[in-house]
Image (cartoon, rainbow, N blue to C red; front, side):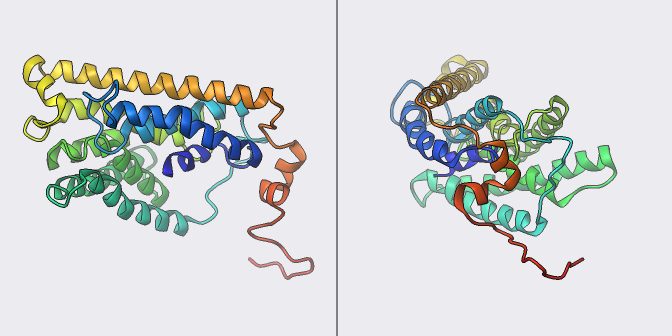
Length: 307
């Protein structure tokens, strides 16, 4: 459910709703489901570590968002016309809901009450470490931390710990959260410099964060906690380097499947005449009006101006 929602964040204000309604179920069948089987269903990546969806959810959504955002192009008048968050309080509320929901996302992946305290706790401390790391980097560069930045850092920490949640110690979880947040911060800054319009930083946070988390899982995985996993045997017999190489291979497979599948599906839909991007007039008017016939914040004619 959450994976297509993440992808949509890169495409807001310009993608055709009809295209999205057709693309999503096809993508779920041809990209997400095979990748989930590879990781959790005894498939190609079954010997690699992905506790709750670092490759399946975050890399797949981030790479797909990157491809679609590149194909659809930037919003008109962007980045000349900046679009700051319209309500920071809702961002913070959403971050709190995500943080709490991630306990079920990661903790529930234990599939049992016994042992769930480990992914539950690692999830919490990784998010906190990501929040602190992002705020420290912002303070160092800009002289002050921002609430939106700290919220993004917390989400980056959550993304980074997702593949590792049940496989690492508390201290390692803090390191993963902090490292991932710093890498995601750099990615966000690079996106701005490259003028690549990933509206809500889907690739910069989820793609980069998922990639970092998958690789760091190999670096920090505890031999005791992965003993029952096929990767535990790899670690015991071939060493830490082989474990990290296996994680890298899983990342590359996820990138290839997500990017290739997205190109194929988008190309076929566009070849069949499905409009990919809304017309310029609809984009200027707003896709809520053009695509759905409604406005979130309608202004009444003759209403007094509020300041």
